[in-house]
Length: 342
Image 1 (cartoon, rainbow, N blue to C red):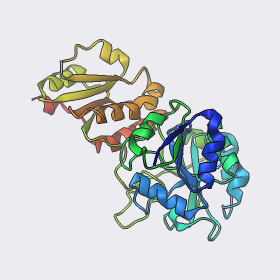
Image 2 (tube, one colour; image 1 turned 45 degrees about the vertical axis):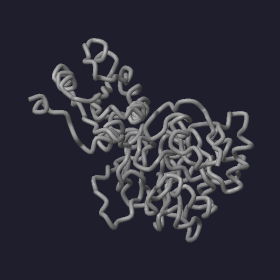
Image 3 (cartoon, helix red, strand yellow; image 1 turned 90 degrees about the horizontal axis):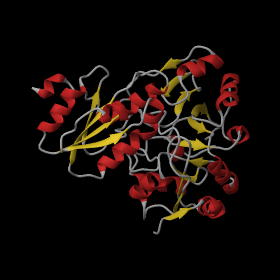
């Protein structure tokens, strides 16, 4: 199968592919999603096959209106409507109970709920409108790998496996949407994103953050809760705030292989790096770092001589909470320590 790169003036052709039951990756403000007609079970099954995704990992359904949600949701609580008004279109995914048989178990993972998102990306909203159906949209990458933030990332992972990619350039946010479960009595964040707990509580009052680890035989309610995510082949080490970067660089120089170093430009510029250090700038500040994190991990994943990656940590507040959530998963919770230098 040839994978076509659709330009923004070719949305009609991309929509026709969706109508035919084919897969088309689409841009959002967070990452690129792998689109299929959410009402076509055969098309949705192709998503799992293309990604190598576990079948009990439910999919987010992308819409372009609240009216589209109403077709499938059993109810939309008043607080959910308040959040939709405040943050849609935007980086907030809302889990709701769905009408019986409204969407297949292939979409829901067998649950009685589904996650809805209204992305802040006009080309994709146009694509949904022209296709006339909601679209499932997990990240458009090989399952477990860093999420794609450019059309080229998608092509790298999925060319030959999907019909096309709608190219809208690099994404703005760079980490996936916040997932909020509104199907329970107490709303709970299942995955942090750019819309923060503080943002949400300003609209609907107190909410919880999930700390439950999904068991082996348990179906997760949202992506990223159960399976390995965002991980390159090289081991990632988190460099905590306050760590002496001189020791990090000393450790890099002692390694018999190349080491990727992902940090803000101000750290890289004032450091004298050894020959085996391969640098990637996270820019300046958490907004830049979040937008660039997956791009950096992907670049190092394409360099087989890079066997380790040291990556700057940020305070886990606001957008930093989403950044650190993804970085911790990428690293498997492994942190750089002074003991490594001895």
